[in-house]
Image (tube, rainbow, N blue to C red; front, side, top):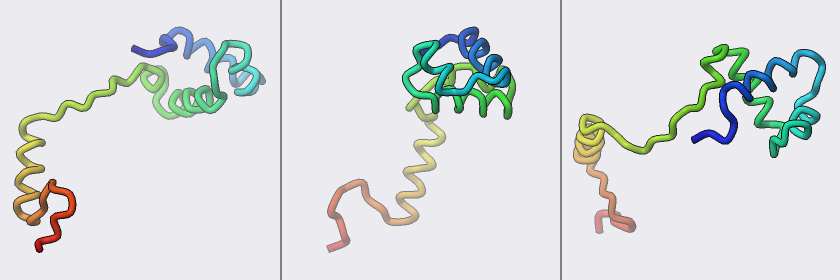
Length: 87
């Protein structure tokens, strides 16, 4: 879950071109770092409102991806064991 919802991000980003700097916006709205706001502004300029939507963080990989990794490891004779240098 995102700390700041989409409506909030839109509000902050739309105030940025009106002459308010990222540092003053961060202070006014309680955002911990002005680089967060600059990131929102950049994503908004690149992708519009879609760029401001929360991006899910997932570490789940498809079965097809996992099989591909295992095949690559087999083809390249790699091992997940640390310190295995073929000795």
